[in-house]
Amino acid sequence: MRKNSTFLCAVSAIALVAGVTVFSASASALDFKGKKVTAIVPFAEGGGSDRMARLWMPYYSKYLPGKPRIIIRNMPGGGSIKGSNWFHKNAKPDGTMISLVSTSNQTGQVLGGKKVKFNLLDWKMIVLEPVGTIFYTHPKVGLQGKGIGESIDILRKTPIVFGAKNPTAAELRGFLAFELLGIKNVKAVFGLSTGKQRKALLRGETNINYDSASAYLKNVDQKYVKSGKVIPLMTLGIWKNGKFERDPGYPNLPTVYEAYKAANGGKEPSGIEYEAFKNFFQMGVTASKAIALPPKTPQATVDVWVAATKKVMEDKDFIKKAGKIFTAYEKVFGTDASAVIRSAIDLSPKVKAYMKKFIKEKFNTNI
Image 1 (cartoon, rainbow, N blue to C red):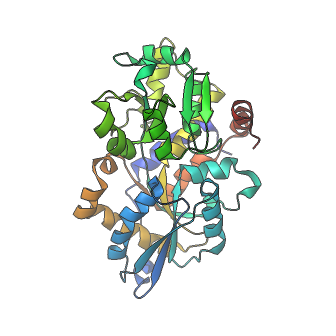
Image 2: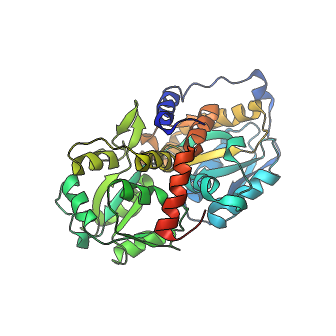
Image 3: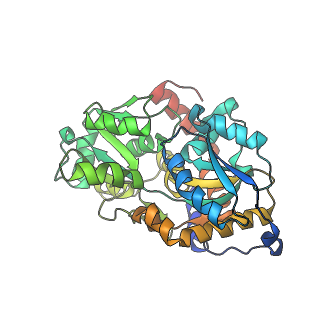
């Protein structure tokens, strides 16, 4: 078991060589001509993974050898667990079926208990797409014009209402950020999809929310920031060169790391709360979105998919449709992507025990 204090250093090293992949000589022999490829999306239509699939798949059809027909199959249920279980059990390792992976798959594996029948460590990652996380508040909280240190002081004294899907979903990175920052008075409202979380904040039913960088740009920044209907607060940042740095998509916003130091007299974060936060940060940012092949897929087949992925990413039409947020984050491929996933979900025994206690005390839920 790797110690949490070193795992992000490994991620940093991986990122430096993310673009270097050696392809086997037999990779070019794989041909999908006349075949159908199925992309499993373990979520309902309209979410981040679904949007990623619908953006990428037409271009994979263009660049995979033989130009196969690709269909998207949504299999929602259990916060990704139903579809992920099905994929793990049924997908053949011949390159004709892939699955979308997100933060929810990872938190599901770590915290889902006996209902989880899949293991992401056995899946063969094709590409990993980091995605930033942006926090924002309702104006009634009173943070407009305040610095990040003063903002955290206000939030520590304010009853916080935060929407989430369920106690073990992707929103845990938000709850852990609040805990690290000493924002203790947090009421969770469960049963809300990402879109419903955003709408609840705009109606004033919740008072703090977050979105992925791309969703924030499309649904919040361009619509509600200038009008003052939401107040940007901070990002989770990214991990680069062995430290937290500002999100390249939103470099003007401070990070949670900066917020902690500003609200604690320049003190560095430490302790079990910080260790848990780093794991779930990685699930939510560094390994936020991915595309994977099933267990036992030959490396030659993985190499074909990775090569096609790199061609997709060079397509000018794809780049235009993906938008500027897509180009802000460095992608990771193949075995390097699998190593990042491993680091994300490889919780130390101390962090596992802490998360079990945290979820029980905060949400009265046993894991």
